[in-house]
Image (cartoon, rainbow, N blue to C red):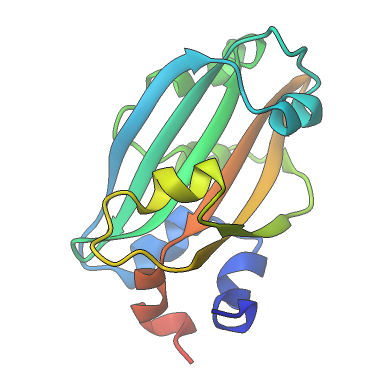
Amino acid sequence: MNSGSYRHWLTDPGSLTRRLQSLSNDFYVRPSRHQYAKPQVDEAQLLGLSRRQYALLREVYLYSNGEPVVFAHSVLPCQSLRGEWLALGRLGNKPLGAALFMNPKVTRTQLEFKKLSRHHALYRRAVRHLAIKPQAVWARRSIFRLSRSAIMVTEVFLPQVLKLSEFAS
């Protein structure tokens, strides 16, 4: 699996939620994890958190036409869940992306990309419900900012995303 197949998905700076909704007859979000815990060391560093600080870790699957196409892992520091972002801690099966892209004051850092192997914790969580496990999966992450608040979103692209027509090769 090379990045070429996934390039358009990885590099598109727009709302992934909106893109998936436009390509799907049946788009929905299925929550998988919602708990306060310590983020991974690299996540904490990028968000300016100490190793002891907890954050809300939210993981969901984005489904299109009955199949999981994206696994989303979000790190929402406790201090970010205030003011305009207070409701983000209670999204349930609503997409986080819709809320982030709705606010014109929200800025986004440059996208980072990584191929996740079977040894990566996010790989294992992302593919656990797939009948056939790929050798690796591609992921991207970025940080969304509003005033002094920051939220990290990592999106793992599952093989079924390539079936969606707009970016099919």
